[in-house]
Amino acid sequence: MENKKSLLILSSSAAIIACISFPIKVGNGILFDLRLVAQIFGSLYGGPIAALVLALVNILYRSLFDGIGVINTLVVAPIHLIGLLFVRRWFLQRSIKQKVFYSFLIGIFSTIITLAAVRWVSGIGIPIKLALQYALIQSIVLCLIIYVVEVIQKLWNVQNKIFQAQKMETVSQLAASISHEVRNPLTSVKGFMQLLQETALNDNQKNYLDISLSELDKAVKVIEDYLAFANPNPMDGIEALNVEEEIQRITQVLHPLANKSSIRMEVETSTIHIMGNQQYFSQCLVNICKNAIEAMEEHSSGILVIKTIKQKQEAVISISDTGIGMSKEEVSRLGEPYYSTKGKNGTGLGMMFVYNCIKEMGGSIQVESEKGNGTKFVIRLPILYPAKLEKTDQAS
Picture 1 (cartoon, rainbow, N blue to C red):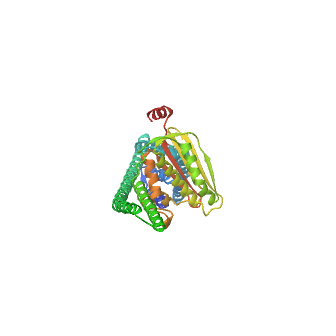
Picture 2 (cartoon, rainbow, N blue to C red; picture 1 turned 60 degrees about the horizontal axis):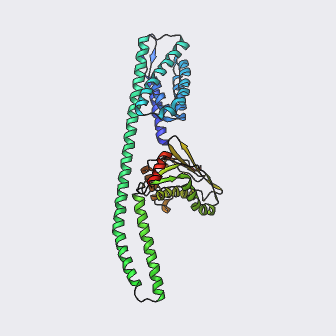
Picture 3 (cartoon, rainbow, N blue to C red; picture 1 turned 60 degrees about the vertical axis):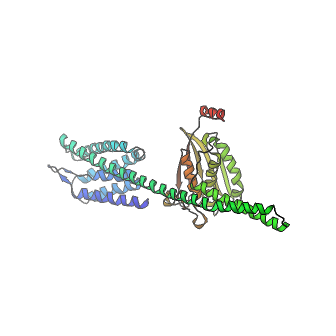
């Protein structure tokens, strides 16, 4: 992510420098260029630091040349910096069509601000026809750049989803193969051992046989869990779930582990109902909380905070810790098969299960983390409203 921002700043800066170096002369000493297109685009997609850097590049490089345009740039560049930072977050939340439309309007406003500054600073009035041409060219170029970037980014995201789906398919096939090839022989072995129990055996032999059967049961359970992790179907056996009750249940399970690591748990919940498989949903919460506790084992007096709120039509569950945190690259790879931040101590199947389960329940997961500053998971799930809850109770 940081490399992408650096590349964006460098490319936008190069575009600004190129535009200033090779302006378009339209007569009467009037020069036009498209440097503001690069500043607008880089500021919107690069963030505050990129916006500041591009504004400084615009001002400093233009100051190397003579002319009244230096003063114009000193006025126009900071105005764009402030305005773009103000609308950036709102702009990035729009759809592709909306971004293209609003980028056209931004181009128009940018032209108005620029021409007004030229008239105010230098007293030069720009002919209406020329002003309209400049406004259209700047707006259309900005729209085209943003449209192309958005389409490429969308295609990239689709490609990543296809790649993840292929990984999931591979894991599911592997799980099915293991289930078939290993569980069946174990079942046969278990059957023969149960037949042995009916024969005349001494106490030691019976004890050994009981232990062997117990271990076989554990082996079968591991295989079944692996199959569930690889291909969960949380919509089987769905029912109305009270999120508050589920969180209270899993906190009771996790308290001994938290106390062992000297970690304090803070829970702030409210009654919110959702639809889902109780076992799978609880397993999701346990996996996330357990990972959070393990991430704080090296920190004395760690804090695990679990909160729930209603937000529009969603139940929002936030689980945050004060652990070691993750880099942006690690966050982006969460949920991939066999990827784990625990190294050799983890398989990644737990988080893969969490992501698949929440997705199948119609929800989403957002992760905020920074190295050394902890991690926050935000789970959003559709709310089950009282009217639907009554119908569910009657049906059950």
